[in-house]
Image (cartoon, rainbow, N blue to C red; front, side, top):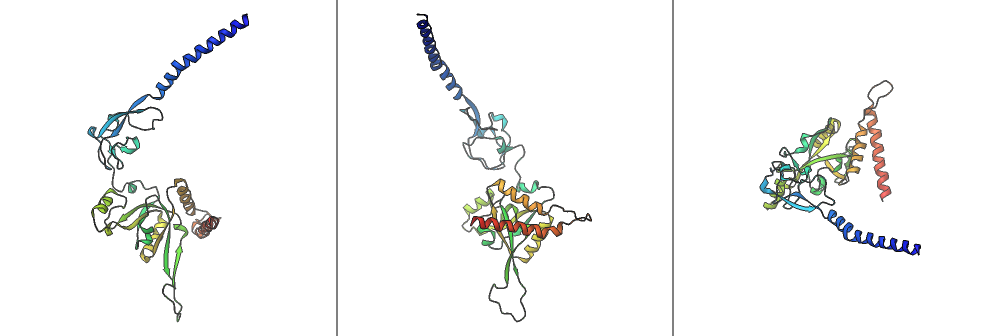
Length: 289
């Protein structure tokens, strides 16, 4: 009899607990997951460099669950700041999309790494510059076309005395910008606007590419620019990890190496290290094929 009473008590407790969970616990959990917070978004399109005003902003509620990090929750947080890139109506405002100072033209020129410089070379044909598809942050290899000396009395057909050459110092180079003959970068809003309004877009095609280079690379690039046979090949795009890996490999080529006498043996190492890097590229290509 006592056992039956215990079983009855346990059954009643289970029923009570299930009712409590169903009518109290679950609604509370749903209420928590559906909790909303106020965030700031744009009421109109905003171009890069424009100062945000209260009239451009609105506060709207969104579900708190999975709230993105850095999103503005009050107008005061972003009112008076400047857009660092073009933004569209309905876009939420994040801290990384605004700045206290107006965006400058050619921002990449204001934060060059120590020991580096920006250097531009001419794109003499559409094909030489990847058919106009080069972009900032691309990692490229620089080739040159050189004319070989003709042996006296030797008869050569057209192009037979030309040879293409790559250089260990220019295997992996970062693109800072691509500039049209109009003087505007090809990815700038001014150039895009000109492209959409002008019937003749020849002034908006890439004319030069600006590269991030150290002094040794810059000296070689100026020589190749004078020769006029530069051709650019794309190596990496869109994969920041791979791009950094390649740029680090290139930097190692210029790392100072001391010989037994303590003299800088970097010049002697450049050729052999460059050949090794090119050999790795060939092995990778063969594996891919």
